[in-house]
Image (cartoon, rainbow, N blue to C red; front, side, top):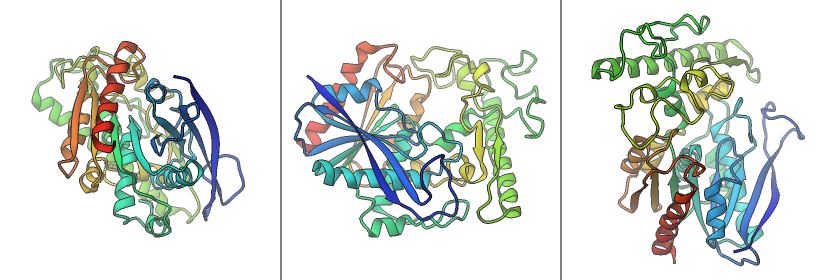
Length: 383
């Protein structure tokens, strides 16, 4: 089937005390989008993908769904490719602007969100606020009124959500990957050997005891909370429109990478989606490596983010499909199960693609099976 890619932009006005993205006129937001659809399509339904930092318009699943006959849109929020200063509440507004535009520009009457990876929790956060708008300020206390946007029709609710190789939330995922051996952020390379799972001198060696894992997890949460406390202190000491950037080291230390008995699945042991987890732990592309005070509270703070994934899932009413890839090196199986369990109604389904990796790049032969599961669910729910 021939498909056509049509790039376009959605532009809207927004009042803001300062700019948090590079380029463009102040007070104007640009949302880059792409429509991937069968040639000549007049469909009234679209699958819309988004992700906090975008960049997924050429993902195998996105393209394959279009080849199977669907109109597919990919929405890149304003933070495309750079989550340094990302505010999750603004991602919700950007997605809402794109959905509203898609209904008028293309005539879509039904929208299904394709929540891929980090787009899963964004999709849940969006639908939660579209159905139950409550947020008037960001976690940093800056005015950002999603309730007003909802009243203006700028957050149209969607008709369904597919969670595809999705994780719970950016904050929980980061916390489960944080290196708890860092006990002083000012001295990130002075690490506690008792918690440093990459140090041969660590007294705990795989397979880890339940006691060690419990202590490790508690120390990860404690580290996240220490950073949050410092962030709040810094915010209180600066002006209302001032900001500070900082670096977070050690964000790829998870007992699931070093001990295959932890949450066993079909994934390869001793590896993560960024390669060798020991190297990725301090590499340049780790989660939250470069961030800001406000962004930390909005997307990375364990106790402060509004994009909680599980909490959002509990409050939505639309049908949900959860697809788990059992060889995923990023979103491990418990994330899919926890998302499914969190959905607060019975119109939900959970399926697995055995042996599939996160991107369907290593196992391209399994892509058609995943698309078939999505097509079957869509046909039963919406045709």
